[in-house]
Length: 208
Image (cartoon, rainbow, N blue to C red; front, side):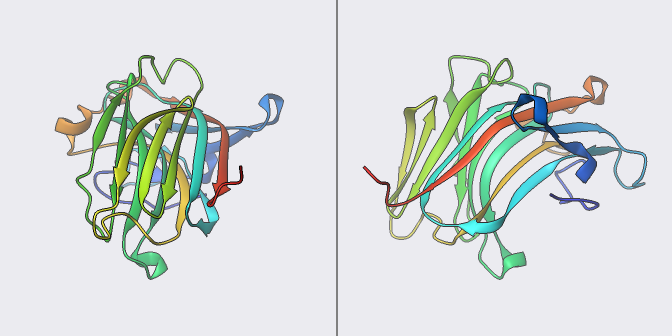
């Protein structure tokens, strides 16, 4: 888990291991908590980020989670690799913007090029209860799912999809300088939590 550093703008927080907790009484539920920080003079807030040790290739990536609600917040489940691993910046995202948790934002980056955001209307509030979200990263497409239902597909056009193995990651963060996207962050709502019940990877090709 990330500890003692920050991504910098637009992440308005420092990552601390203390903000990632596990509840053995509820099947090992993982909770990310965003709260005030009094240790780093450069950041007023601390939150949690958790990532896999290994990088994963094509397959199905699933999460069962409850998002955080509140203007300026992002709760996430995503894949990432980049220059820190001597790779191009590749990424595949599921994000919940706290300003409207009745939608899911999906996106992907290939060699640092993004701008592929799509908003998916859920028909429920992802901050109210646990729901299942997933994507299948395949050689020729990415399929996104909500509670087992296919909601969006991106197909490969001359190498436009990510191709490098990536880490599985989750985090909860407040944005600064991105009010048009997230709405202004209001710290009076703290502490806030995003809770994860399950994260699962199934390699491709899938068995029948």
